[in-house]
Image 1 (cartoon, rainbow, N blue to C red):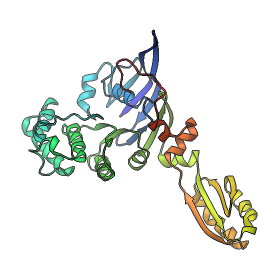
Image 2: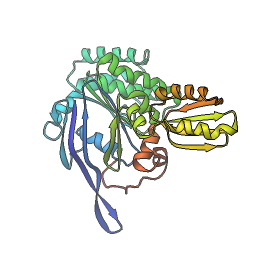
Image 3: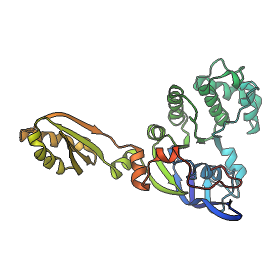
Image 4: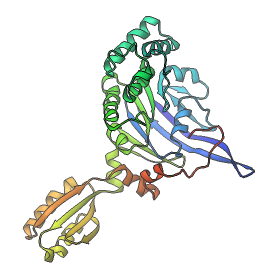
Length: 333
């Protein structure tokens, strides 16, 4: 459904009096299969939105090629746009026009008749829990309702491929969780392919079949969330030993399945790949040798652990702090 090779986007920025060329996207290769939900993860300034803008024909690539829904983004931009749905980070609805009118007008821009756009829009209002809001204006809606209205606008023409750019930014936790449920149903009920950009780790984890991590304009990882976490970090196993005199024995037992074993007070900790498979045998060995535990805790790694391992910094820290890229002329990364 999406195939990109060597995708590059350069911009010019000023450093003092000099103009310097900066690569916002630096040779991105990616593939997205039909029916797949892909989370595109990275901090601000990493190149997420710039990549998405190239794939949706809003920005012409400086170099490289990309085909979206079977069409070349550079030479067949009209066909690409007719085949996709796009929900921007900023949203695309007027605060004063009635929601139903906005949806119908949007559908007609894609070639639907007024009757077709009305029927499609009203069906989506039902599916996305917007019942009774057809005549209401967006300024009369909650943040979650407005975001779901943005998604209706992107779906009204029944695209097979949907791009969602930071769909839950600014929503409260309840509204975000509600929107996650609706995004998950896009594939399960509509058979859609979804390309989702986000900087929320838990969002990518919960929604995506596969996660791509971009940093400084390059893809640094692409796999299922579980595989990335298992391969890069492993689970942390924390054993609280009841008898302090058996700490050394417990550490030796844990070392048979774990890396980076450490003793801290009455706790023995280590990293274990796929601990769910290995811990039952460990517990049997501890019991057989008479080592009693006060507690055991298995802590699953997060995508932030993956990002930290791959880049040497936390994604949460990178997101919260200033970007390491300069301000670019004519670009919103």
